[in-house]
Amino acid sequence: MEELSFRPQSFLGLENRSSTLDNCRVVILPVPYEATVTYRPGTKLGPSAIIQASQEVETFDLELKADPSEIGIFTCDFLEVDARGPEYMIEKVRRACREFIEKDKIVALLGGEHSLSLGAVKAYREKYGDLSVLQLDAHGDLRDRYQGSSFNHACVMRRIYELCPIVPVGVRNLSREEFDFIRERKLQPIYVERIDDKGDWIEKCLERLSENVYLTVDMDVFDPSI
Image (cartoon, rainbow, N blue to C red; front, side, top):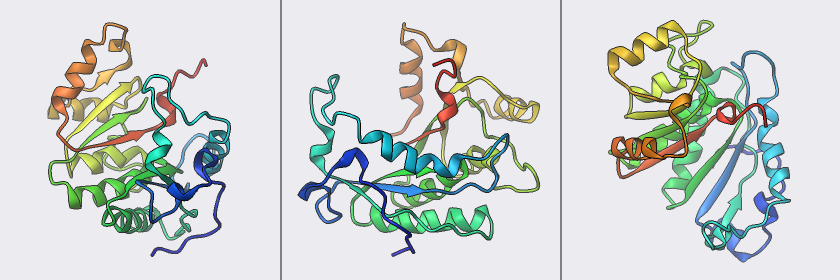
C-alpha cells in the first residue's frame, strides 16, 4: 500500500457498511498535489474542498432515479506527496491506482493538478488495452514541454495521447504548438462553440471512444461566469 497521510471526511458523508474498502465498488483517492501549476496556487486544496462540499449533496440522483452510493463508495486517506518532481508523483499515483484496480475497484482520483491523471491512465491502461480518454477541459494540455518539464500539467494530455486515443471536449484555449499538433494528428476536439442543446456533438464523441473509457475533468471546463 502506498504511504497515506491523514484521513479526510468521507465523500458524501457516507458512514455505513457499504463504504468500507472491502465492500465498496468505488474508491475515492484524494491527492492534494500541486507543483507545476501556473497562474496561482490552490489546486492542492481541491480534494478537501470537493469532499467537504459533497457532505451537502443528496445521494439520490433525480436523473438516474437511483442512489449511486448504494454500490459502495470508500474514501481513501490522502496520498502522501512526493516532492521530488511531478514524474515521481505520477508514478506514485499509478501504483496506488493499480493496487485498487487489481481489487476490481473503480478509482475516482481527486486532484490536485492535472498532471496526476497520467498516473491513473497508466494504471488503467495496464488492465484495459483498448482504453480511450474523454477529456473535459478548457485547454488542450498538449504541449510537449512546458517550463522545462515534459510532465507539467500543460503536457499531461500529450503524454496520455502517447498511450491511448483521446477525445478533448470543451476546449476554448490553445497555444500555437497545440493547434498545430491537433491539426497534424487530426485529433478533432469538440471546441466549446460546438457544444449546444442539439446534442449531435455527443454522438460524434461516442463514435470515437472505445469500450473502456477513462474520464478526466479539469475544473476550468465549467462556465466561469457561474
